[in-house]
Amino acid sequence: MGIRNKKDSTLFTAFHVLLLLAVAVVLIISLKFDAGLQIAPLYEGGEVTLDSSWTLYEGDLLIDENISLPYKISGSVRGRTFSVSRTLPQSLPNGNTSFSVETNLSTLKILLDGRAIYSFSGDSTPWGKPVLGGGFVHFVRLPEGAAGQEISMVMQSYSSSPFAGSIQAPVLGTRSDQLLYQLRELPSLAFGFLFLFTGIVCVLTSLALKRGKERNSVWHFGWLEIALGLWVSTQSCTRLIIIRNPVLPLNFSYIALFMLPFILVRYVRSSYTVINRLLRPFIVVSDLFLLAYAGGGIAQYLGLFGFSDMLLYGGMGLVLFLIMLFVVLLVDFIRGNRELLSFLLAIGVLFLTVLAEESLLLMSIVLENADILHGGMSLCGVILLTHSARVVAKGRKTDIREKMLLDLAFTDSLTGMSNRTAYEQRIEELAAANGFTAVTGVLMIDVNDLKQINDSLGHAMGDKVLQAAAIKITELVPEESTVYRIGGDEFMVFIPSVTNEQLSLLGSLIESQSPAVDGYRYSMACGMSLYRRERVKPITDVIAEADTAMYSCKARMKQSRA
Image (cartoon, rainbow, N blue to C red):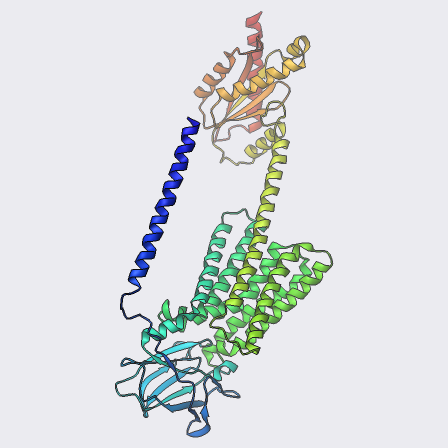
């Protein structure tokens, strides 16, 4: 039978291999045939970047001619109005051309031969001015006959941010071409969603863990990933393809920036053993980041300055915060705190990827997206998650060890029942229940003639009788009962939610037993009492009644044998 099954299993595997090969062949044939179909692609690749021959004005004053975009205006641009103009090509990419430009300025007007065809302003928002600090893409449909006409972009900023004076090169093409062109940032979006998903899963998972270091470590790691996910995803094409309001995601990037120090220092405190005095300054500074965010909101509302004005300083503050935290923990590591290795390694990876990105920029190598940085963030997250997993595993081992020790402390080594220590703890719980304990039946059980068994048949036989008695009592009492061995031959049973009648029947059943151990038959005496919800008597008096009843039963059984 075994050989036949093995043969059948081999044939089964071979069949599926042939089936999968057939599927692969059909797919290859389908791709080859369908590749010859003449269908217009969604992306035509016909976009044209207008990056040269621009003229820059401030108001009516000529500033510079024949400039190339992107262009950085020097000095503060807050409250100043700039415009750049040039002539559109004589032939546009297609008959349905859209004009798109990315800007972080607060207002934008597009003029065609002096005639306004597009206008954007944030003055109508409740904040008074829009919260702009990252790239914001405007899409403008060019009217018929726009080819060869002069196009102008008029911009005004309410921000003092150094980034506000940057003018990007516009792109001509169909709306679908321009959107697909923006999707070159799709890897960033994928990284952002990966961070968000990981963070949400970790936050939810932490709720199922025991309170303490394990839960705190996974909890703070989850929020760290969520903050990174908000930052990365809102700096990508999310603004164009997921949320219809392209400005709204920028709010999430700002709060992520200012929350990162707060979350990071608490992750370190909950996941590593670090002297409090080393982390205390960083905790204070992380609180200042939150105050800065709240204060920035108030300042934005009052029109003093905006979040975009804080972007550079917030970013520089975050980098400085990370460097100082790294240095302080590195010193602690050198002094012997080897547990910090994983955190230092994670931050070191992050620093290296930032350095790699900056080095490429210095070599004039511009990447389509920050894949190197995001890859570094991912590796950093893997290292920290691995450490959090070790924290959880260590906590579980400690719990198991503590449970084993607790079980040993509260378990009778001979019978496996709860011992007198556990019994006394239960008495204290019942005494402190203040009337909220359910009705509890109390059985006091004694193994008859145990001393005689030990003297005549030996202690080994006496131990066997006690073990057998413990098993028999457990079989007879209700499943929810708790059985304790409180002395040499005495057992105590607590039975919840029982009546006097049920308790009497159970006592009679125990008294009637005459089980045998290695041919020797033994019996058990039983006394009972009821601990009522009304607390007519304290638990100690109820136990004393059961004990008295048990001795009466023992004497009665001895008399009946005489």
